[in-house]
Image 1 (cartoon, rainbow, N blue to C red):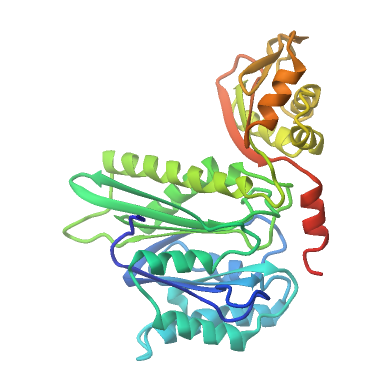
Image 2: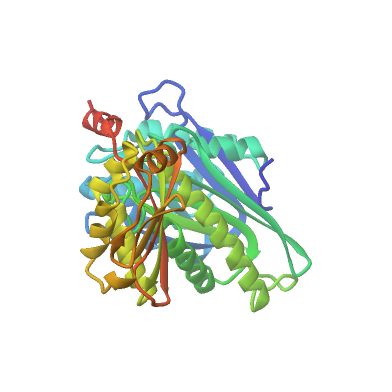
Length: 401
């Protein structure tokens, strides 16, 4: 059972944008009343049209929903692409309220898929109209909406939380997509988080950015940053009966949001195209958290590290050397490495270990854990990535053909 926030409706339909017959490719999420919206977006200088549109509309306290298409990124499509992204929001507003009380700027827009192709707007329009007719506040409507944002994903990626907040039952639910072209910051993906917790726009933006920095900005597959990364959060408007969360309420909510965002984010590299391993990299002992993050990213983006994990090869020198060229200070004399809890290197010297035991621990589990101490400082970080194998190369060499 998925715990859905009150006051939101969902739909996902097929409009034949994707080549797979019947695959859902248009999603619509609607708030029954104006809601709070916050967003975090790609830092790529080549930016897709829907990112430009949504970024200009967040944070806000007037948003009524999000419209998404998959199968076409609407990226690198110039003036027409921008017009099409705006048109998607106009179509959503019109379809949800044919009486014309809703406006285009009350909707956010996302697109995902192949870059450099114009949207088939007739199909998109038909999909939006169909989705508006199927909007539902039940679980099936939510699951259909989740399916409508997927591209190369093996399965939908969802998470939810239900908890008490100062005597009020509160919900957060999230969906995301992504399996390849993952290289923060932002992590390459689409994600939508929805909550009935009330908050102000600036507050929602701050909490979302903080959650992103601990989750979606800490994942990678091959380090290729997308043009379409979008993470948005929709939240309830404060009212006289239920004002914006603050103090202990905000701290409790933020903790739940962070945990759920991390849960969702890990599902992306775990579903990496052709991946056989999810790699969790934990760094401690750096001078600062930022330094630890740089070391984690350096290791995560090393093809030599990734291919070693694919083969179950405990070639720990690749990990240590990747830490050494991260561009931040480390203390080799205090550096220590473990893979899956097995010590391999400590204080600048190799430790005796059975290579076959370490290899078996890697090959025998989908999750490989790398723990690296780089000094005696307070800085720490986590990063999640995948291994790299021939299936990933095959899949991405044939992506558009």
